[in-house]
Length: 222
Image (cartoon, rainbow, N blue to C red; front, top):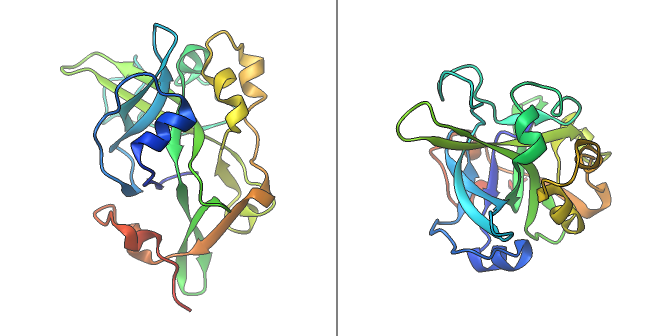
């Protein structure tokens, strides 16, 4: 699963990579984004453009009782996302990109659960495949999102058996386009190329969501 990630890239760089056409929200660099917090997503606008919006991490289905119910979910499995009632409608028409420049995973070792920071070898910005939903049974309404996960690639399987779906930039348009049918969208949900990724051990400082600073990303000293 994906339970923490970072987004420290300047907003203007996000505008260029994701072709944002609307205004950019004002938000600081994030080194340890945690569930239930607001984070940036890219989604289509009604006029055919793309916007960067801040949504709550942990999808709340429109039919659920609310954000504190058992139906608030941070990850959706690629293998079942098209069929599960919680995600089915969003998978058809409310797909989004979740910008990130790295994510965390934990591996059981002799000294305890060791956190790893994982990203692209070149440290570049990328995007997870995500879904968003609107829950309007309360005031105010809540817009939320989930990150889709799949089987880990050959590199990350050393740490965990699952990984978030990282989309190739060439696939952003197809993923966001509601005209892409379920089969076409499902075909994009695959493990990312292992030769383009890298990971490193980091401090257990990241274990607490209260810690949100550059130290969360610093390599762990031997």
